[in-house]
Length: 102
Image (cartoon, rainbow, N blue to C red):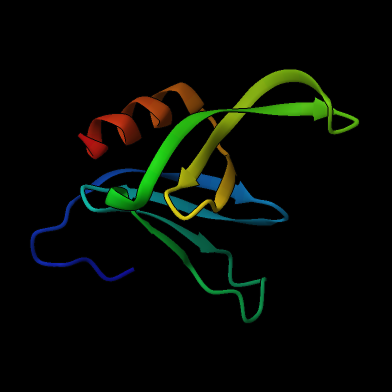
């Protein structure tokens, strides 16, 4: 991942963006999911922080309806796209994303 000269990594960890495994990186400017190399042709997903409308806990569900437990963060952009990142220490990710957004 290439960083701008005024960009710094805040948090980084293994994550899933269904159904792909990879690495989630939060910088002071964007949130980036980089899929593992096993996912041929898959491109990184970059979400500039100023395009994020909402960030909240993501729930693992039973039958796509019944929430079981929190397992990551859901990021919604101002254009209406929604990304469900499964990541450990989801509450830390949520807090850091919110803080980085200002």
